[in-house]
Length: 80
Image 1 (cartoon, rainbow, N blue to C red):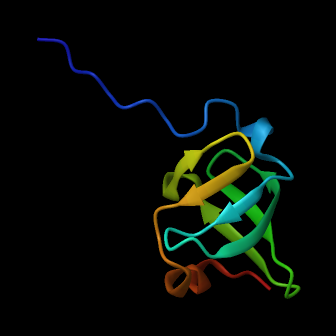
Image 2 (cartoon, helix red, strand yellow; image 1 turned 135 degrees about the vertical axis):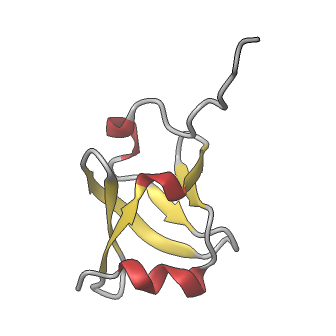
C-alpha cells in the first residue's frame, strides 16, 4: 500500500519573498522579507519582525501567504 502525502503549501519558497502574509482569521501581518530552511521572516507595518516556522504556512495563492494560526497567537514568534 502506497502512502500519499499532501502537497506542501509552497513549492518554491523564493516565490513568497515580498508577498503579503495573513493569519488564519484573515488579518494582515506584514510581508515576507526573507526565508531560511525552517522559517520565514516577516516585517510588519508596526516595525515588528517575526520569525515563523514554515510548518505554519497552509496556503499560497500567488500573491498572499496564509498561516494556520490566528493573529492572537503570532506574538510568540516576534523577534523585535
